[in-house]
Image 1 (cartoon, helix red, strand yellow):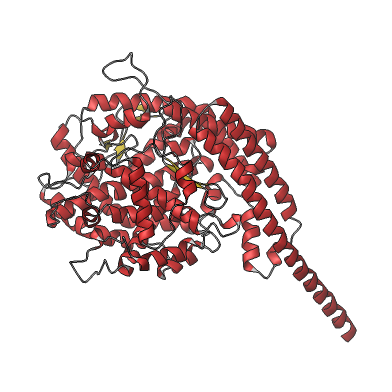
Image 2 (cartoon, one colour):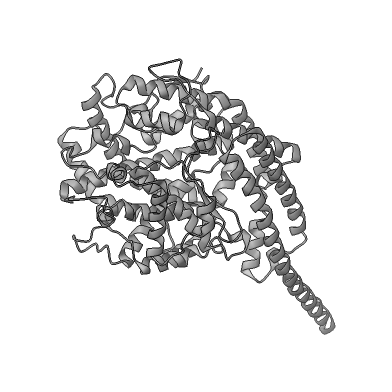
Length: 616
């Protein structure tokens, strides 16, 4: 018996020794693989940048070829990875790297399918970028682009018929035109998910958040915030009725979305002049002052860089200034103007592509995009596999924390863009309401962008009802409806860039919730917010120059994706749970005011069902 035990023990020790030896080899394998992946992803990113900066057939062909090459390489990697017993290793870091690398994504598709997938997505993305519509007053002039011509009208016109004209044309060309490609995209998305051992593409996207209860958590947080959204919605409808009349805006129905100052009704701050609680109080809008002072896109980016360095964070490298596109080129080329930040996976090669306009909102967008760049720079010392955000929402939140700070009267006065502004109670409510038109209004919009795609990926909606399912969600969560009746002959979802371009949208919802957690903590660290001191409110906190807040950001950002996101959140502020408490705290004075005002004016809260989409 003793002899048998000894033999078993020797066998076990031998196995352990073999595993330890294999783990050492695995570490070396990962070091080499990370370097090779960074090199290959750099080549792919360069090809994507070339295409996004100059949309033509040659660049599209090159981009798709390089993506296919990388996919082929990833398939080879997945075969190699199976040779390692990584799930049995002792080192958690090595296990985490292998787990991340074992996800193939779309590269799991057979070669022909992968090529077809790339073709479908780049065809939708290219279509979106090239949409041109006809002028409302001159139907022979048909060269109006989304940026800047259509957006200029959508944000500034107050003529319902003109707004409807541009809405209908844009949705037909950006959405309905690509239905065949979108259907194939959904099929291939589902096939790729199953090849990666997921039940659908919805689960692939949710897996990035490393928490099986994440969908439920978001539903719960949204349920907490919904009452405030309904108060904002009711008040906006009440004020729009005063402006447009009963024939245009219903008393109890959903809001006609073309009147909300945004093509997708995702943020409503561009109609602040119509719905501001105290119209006689000036709203903070420093656009005219920026123009007067001779601001340029370059100056806006230099100011963003200054904000980060004031917190003792990393200065923008020279490569950024040499290689970024921060103004729309004037040589007539088609390009994706949608603002985006790019990491090229070398050292210091980071770029932004943005057709920057000299406006207040674009000043905030500049800070948002630079937040991505700061994240890239903070984690560029890590292995390739960790060079991404703790979760996709963290990446979006960083720059928005700075934007919250930049948009305060306190900061705008500091940088000499705002003069003689008195922040009394009425001005404060105006300012909070303006912020809510961006931040609170966005939450249900963002949720529906992915809830809709999850339902298609999961096969929960019959193809014959795809379009009305989209509008049903928009009505249910946002209380908005299209300006004209839609049917299944229309197909409207891809008229949003991120849906055409296969970009997961939950990151923005998570970001809009978690950025207030970051902001509140940063403000406390900066000595700018004290719940017990009315002189230091959360909604006028400026973290510019706070080295303490900068250190907290460094602690979190430098982790990249090397730890699960609750660890990264804890590194920032000691918390481990995403919560809606900070966003509620920020808007509490507005909630109290809105509830009283809506009761006083007998405003209907909520909305009746929409009749603006008819399934055949």
